Image (cartoon, rainbow, N blue to C red; front, side, top):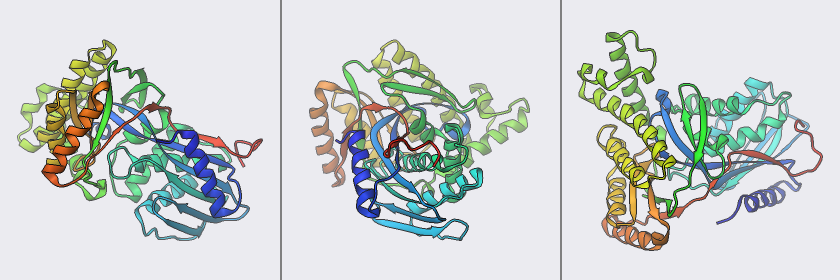
Length: 395
């Protein structure tokens, strides 16, 4: 698998091939894995993500007019229009790009046109947040064009707003946050109530993180993701009527659960509470190098996501069961929004090949479908690489 430098060089070369000149800069943003803390971010909970060595890159050069020309290598399409004119995106990737651009322009008063090329190697629809990597890379690419560059937190909040406003997905901030702020070799403990984080060592000794892709693609806007957001919110409002002292979801405790008469709302809130506690327990276990407990917490998370939050599917459930059955895996769970995507597994380093062979064979036999199994390195978050030397931060 290519390194970041190789991806940057490839992006530069593709830009030259399309536009006939060297780009001024290349922005990059990685995909992410989330060790634990799923479906908690949009309810001000806790998560434990880190970035992986797969990136979306955006090569860009400013123009001396208002023309916008963006090419996507992965989707083999482009979009062209002028700032200040209406444009109707007709592909999913265009909605992300157009939304980011409109919100960035609204925030900064951007007047400069540009030409850009988007490429990368983040797997699409596999639960490692290719869409967030696209948003974060594109926002970082736009930032030097502003008269006053935006701070990173504002950038990722605009990315989240893009999903809310232009994709109709009421997502949290986990994916964008991890893509922007991750550090190599570290996991981030994210608190979405305070929008703060701290880093801990991601060292897992003789084990490593392995992802098994179900090859069942899902789009959050086409799934029941937004339905879960609404259900947990309604459960909180029900409890707030009985306990006015509750200000946010983070004020909820186990003692409040019996006061929810709706069994569905009770299950949704129970997952939220137990998952937040699992994040805390996983951090403690990682700091103590207690990987057996980490594995148990992973599997417990999957059971909660399957039974209480109901965002799994039979393919993900099967991958978890088969991973644990190999004997080489301490814990496994579905990762990401659910309804497809991948599982994250804590696997012995010296048994990755045997683990992969067993899971691949059994999964194909069960579903007549291939599973892609990947091992990732934990890397730094997003950045901008100046291609043309001595170019100022703002063009």
